[in-house]
Amino acid sequence: MPSFWNGLRSISLPAFTDAASLNIEHKPRTDPAPTRMTPAQQFGANVAQAREQRGLSQSQLARKIEVVDTYISRIETGRAQPSFRLILAIAHHLDTTPAELFDRIT
Image (cartoon, rainbow, N blue to C red; front, side, top):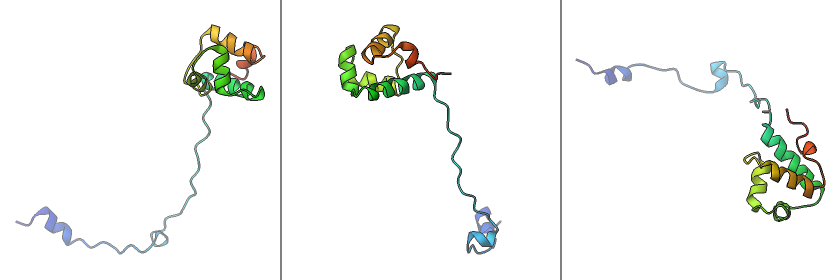
């Protein structure tokens, strides 16, 4: 009794030469639509923009509001959500209002 694998050896396949011979149309890759920022990410982007406009580094802002440097980075990337007290301190040290830090959040 012949085995399954022996039967596969007898199957002949057409030779592959190129994609054109297979009538395959090349379609350029399209990137997916940009994703919307989360509210935390938009808040963080607003903090980063205000901080940069005032010429402060993340470390300088962190020292002013008495948090570690990495916490500012996490806020600006939307990975941390500061308390109300911290939002007030950030706004104060960036000479802005909390409302402006929440601008464009939908």
